[in-house]
Length: 245
Ligand SMILES: CC(C)(COP(=O)(O)OP(=O)(O)OC[C@H]1O[C@@H](n2cnc3c(N)ncnc32)[C@H](O)[C@@H]1OP(=O)(O)O)[C@@H](O)C(=O)NCCC(=O)NCCS
Image 1 (tube, rainbow, N blue to C red):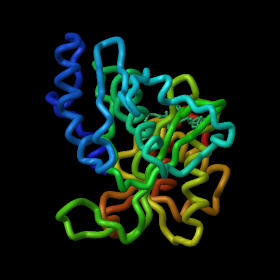
Image 2: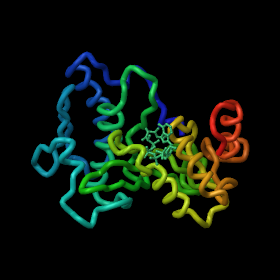
Image 3: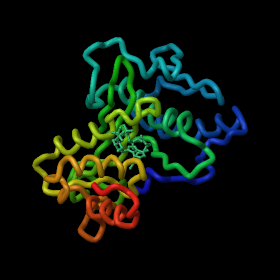
Image 4: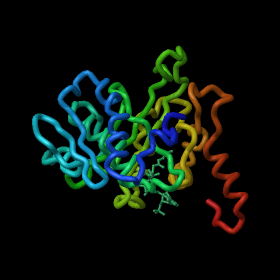
């Protein structure tokens, strides 16, 4: 989905220091403030430290991402206000700033709305990734009056030091299992190069899913989707030196 690739300079935090970062926070603050239950949450940010004010205390971002609840392990649905904050920090602070090379053209995702369906990936007492979905029949955007024609995996992220350990694959598998009754599933356009590789590995291991996964633009009509396996094959064919899968 387009919103995950907004790259306007004005929204991009600059490396010039705290002042610019404050501006960035000022820009995202209204989005957070639009959540009904977030009146008690404020963000403090500098180029080195980002802290969140929740329940009358300041928390470092890493503290916010930690949990003492041993039941929180693996992929868990975002349900509580606290989990929304964790999702926000992972998306906007960790992915959007701390773990992104600000000089390159990497994608980033806009803050998720309070209604966004999301799962957080918990591992050894900390949140290390997330994915979000758009339900079939849900509105594509405010005021658009158009609904998704298929379930869509919209945004997905794994923290840098947990990558290449099968977590992206696990989230894609979970998405496919969650919507096992649907004939077609989307991954929102454009798919990043790393995510194409995840899809490729997944589809090599699960041939039965090859006809089901589509790179889709909303609302996901036939003219707005491309079969991912086909695309992966075409990319492979253009690189004859690579092993075929
Ligand atoms: C895309 C992303 C979620 C993948 O997460 P991950 O946990 O590293 O993925 P996995 O470990 O499950 O990767 C499975 C396979 O995909 C391939 N793969 C994954 N990332 C790759 C990369 N950067 N380069 C080449 N191949 C890659 C590999 O074959 C890998 O298996 P291997 O490690 O045994 O070789 C992660 O890189 C990320 O968060 N990127 C930034 C956000 C993003 O691009 N989101 C996708 C939006 S469409």
